[in-house]
Image: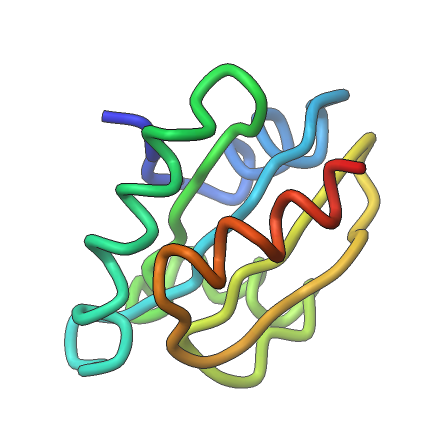
Length: 110
């Protein structure tokens, strides 16, 4: 699968903040209807852009991962946050179709 689930704060720091590549983190929760509807859209874009962008997911319900949400100021879900070289570049919130999501990502890649 083209999306890696983050399981700890340390893993987030290492894989996302420690990456020199563009890393996109999908913040979601199982109870969030827009998140579950958007998940196949995110997976499709992740597969299409595999090798160009690294995709990660953070379950907002996981209490051990809450420090990530607080540190990155994630106030609502679904949210996607774009990182490069350990710095936040951009963020988008709310449901997005695959074509819109892909276009937004390609703007950041440029």
